[in-house]
Image (cartoon, rainbow, N blue to C red; front, side, top):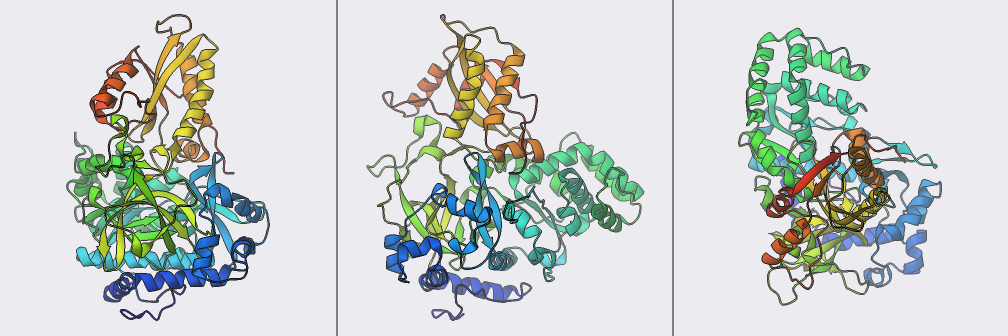
Amino acid sequence: MTRGNPCQLPGMLPNYDPNDSEAGMKILEDLTENVEQIQQRVLEEIITRNARTDYLKGFLDGQFDKQVFKKTVPVVNYEDIKPYIERIANGDSSNIISAEPIIELLTSSGTSGGQPKMMPSTAEDLHRKTFFYNLLVPVMTKYVDGLDEGKAMYLLFVKPETKTPSGLMARPVLTSYYKSNNFKNRPFNRFNVYTSPDETILCSDSKQSMYCQLLCGLVQRQEVLRVGAVFASAFLRAIKFLEHNWKELCSNTRTGHVSDWITDPGCRKVVSLVLNKPRPELADLIEHECNSKSWEGIIKKLWPRTKYIEVIVTGSMAQYVSTLEYYSGGIPLVSTMYASSECYFGINFKPLSKPWDVSYTLIPNMAYFEFLPVKKKNEDGAQYVQCNGVCKENCMEKETEKEDVETVELVDVKLGQYYELVVTTFTGLYRYRVGDILMVTGFHNKAPQFRFVHRRNVVLSIDTDKTSEEDLLKAVTKAKVIVESLGILLIEYTSYADTSSIPGHYVLFWELTSKGNNHLPVLDPKIMEQCCSTVEESLDSVYRRCRRKDNSIGPLEIRVVQHGTFDALMDFCVSQGSSVNQYKTPRCIKSGEAINILDSRVVARFFSQKAPFWEPV
């Protein structure tokens, strides 16, 4: 590929040695300089490959023109394509949506009908992801020296998977990648040598996997140059796990023997090889640091050569920034990439920027990108206002729902404007609304850069869960039936994601009254705990998996507040600029002041006493 005249077809991925950072930067410069040409070729190739699929031929009628594609192929949500995905899951041919064989279905953290969405994936898509991962290396080496002189303690995990009736595997996108030959048989890359052996990453027992990866990371502490996990929430769970298990980890280090409860044969074998001998001095050092009264800066103390912590801290993960900074000891937090089950999108070209300044440059050969303009609520052009004074980030825009709204191409987005991302992929998604709201913050060469603002319709998220206002309403409606049968009315409710402890948990504020009077009823703890459990059982599969299998979300809590609490909340919202006439109780709050108003009026607290039912579906 040459500047201004790319010879590399966008469907074909440039080959280069990931150890050659200069070559990697050259590819990135070419990709971002030739955005319009590459996007045109991406779309041409996708249409040429797939025009005869059942899905596209109904719209294109044998034509291969870009304008015909944009005029006749509709912008769709998951519900529109779900029947095609389900047909493939049940044994129909891949060519109903893709000319390339679909080898697996990737389960999204978003849900449809309470179950994870399923996205098609092909063998070529794994190569595209490998190419994408390799491009992260030259960006990091541009800003951080000496990354090839040590190891990365990246805590990576696989999630549960299942088989569809057709025999295809259905699993999360990262589980798919870690279990692929692209990961297991990856060529040596001196910039990405991990302290965790593959066997510990691929262990299906999350507790054994976590223990073994931390033990390997501690033993190799002097070689560790960077630490991290995919999500901030996962890395903080690792720190909490270390806080609860450091004495046993010290004992293993001191004796050179792995704990007997580590029964996974692959883990036992590789961890024993890493441990290999008693290390009493190292055990003393770890014990000294972990036995301190304060764990502030513990990451820097245990892994003193660490140059940065790599975790996603944008979107819902931003709520963990302050906690990460407490443990980090001043080590920079780095979000390197923007990706999803549908597609890998963009790279952070300024990785050392502060979490709130992170922007991602979309890589134009990953997919064909379009954008639905998102209008601010106040049409007079003023800065966006806080919705009800408490929910600015989730409610600032007027969602674009009309199908006749024209999309904007990647090269035509405007600085400072908000858009919803729409993708057409090589794997069988055509003009698909991803659901992410982005803001254009700048450009690298001719490639736009975007800040992730939030996920459309999501009001609560702790880990990979994404609970919408509608999901929450359905769950609360089922739970309130329990108290109504006892003559108790639920007057109002709201919620927030409490991440003050790890793992975080959902909190519901309920204002209750007895039927026929205005008195706070006497509450039976067992009944209220049942309400908590009913809400959890009514939430979607991803939430229930996080609660039961991953232990990445804590028990749901209901906080009962005194009468008049929601009037006080309204007064606060109005004082912050909300209209009295248009006010309605926000179903999720993020404002610390608003939470304090509610918390100051709590009269009783109840927690779910059992994890909700979950199994792979």
